[in-house]
Length: 158
Image (cartoon, rainbow, N blue to C red):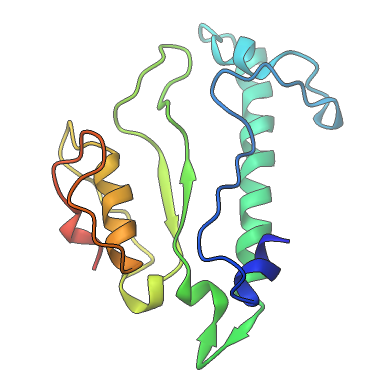
């Protein structure tokens, strides 16, 4: 539905949340009957880490499926994915410690050619994630001076 909404220009912005950090959702289809949040406090337990790995793999697979669907739609001289910017990540870098720095975020799509892809771009410690949201809005043509604790757009994405 999300791909169709983008393809038909019914919307240009969406949020697709697989789960929130506090969710205690279970994944019986993955043979994970423990709650997600409960498992995130794994304390290094290998069995819990394996279950978190199954959940993370499932979520990443769902995101890859969405990217594949966007890449399959021809649009202009390229693909629908070329004109999108999608962020995939988490508000925690380590759920066991509730750590919020060095967030694992993947940015997909080329933002209409405004993003250079296929690379890992590290940012300085203490760079607010809101700088990414500010940058994404800028690339979408939305002029905003700041979002939350942002300190400015991320220049290294072009």
